[in-house]
Length: 333
Ligand code: UDP
Image (cartoon, rainbow, N blue to C red; front, side, top):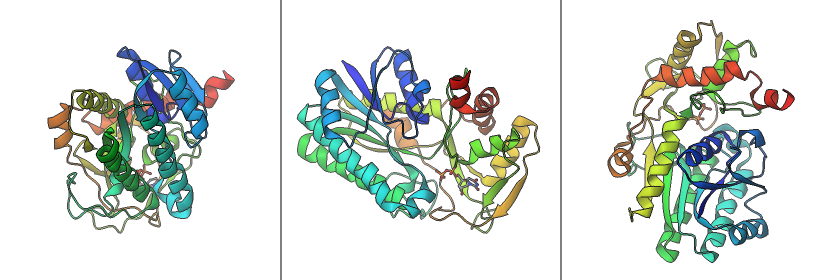
């Protein structure tokens, strides 16, 4: 039996494939390579190129492969972009999941581990945020993920789908040996942009707003190492297989850093100046997102290993420093 990793050529998906294979799982990967990189997929994984909204394509895979469970990473995931293009987000994210759940049901595949997001909460009432807190997304991205969680909830009620919706806070870092890492085009995430500035690929970074209701005025986020994030996925999969109750789990380090604090930490790690200017707020950004991850720690036995922001930025720096052109370089080299 194999696990099917959807979006396995993306930043987070490729780390999941890598860890699953190193733990002895048989892995089948699907990716439409819209944003993913074929080179990032572990060579021992079986790869199919295609889109999960294509029901015929997905049916073909579930018919040909012996799939026991699904890890679902393929979705659009940019808060700012989603405000500009809401319908593209509902189409890719919500419709993609609807097709997937239908095909899973037809093939009696019960387990799904799903990337959700802190963006389902919107502007939180208080931090740290627990799973029960109110959910009023401030972006179509967050709204699409909340809809997807509800689709899984009702599919659980009706068809017995066993799901874990893992609400990621901010994911960063790279595999320890620097062989896989983050390479988005265009890049929009804070830590890679800061590190590209340290490499001299950008002149400066723009801090999106310094007038938020936080100590230094910039947004606060909870940064988590990608390897710890994937560990939680595998624990969640085992938890469901051991009859654990389906539901949502926050994944974060439970510690918040402002944009200015991330800049300062990156200057320390890289020993580079990293010029920053202050710009406008970015649409859809809540001021402060920090997780309570007690539920994941208690029920899944999850214990993040990288609880220091310098470690997280350091592993991302190693990747960027060794691969200044991301996967492009590997193709040309
Ligand atoms: N951010 C910023 N400048 C940038 C990119 C991001 O100030 O060039 C801020 C952004 O407003 C947010 C935080 O950094 O408060 C993290 O943003 P990112 O896009 O990395 O992740 P998100 O929180 O959207 O998932």
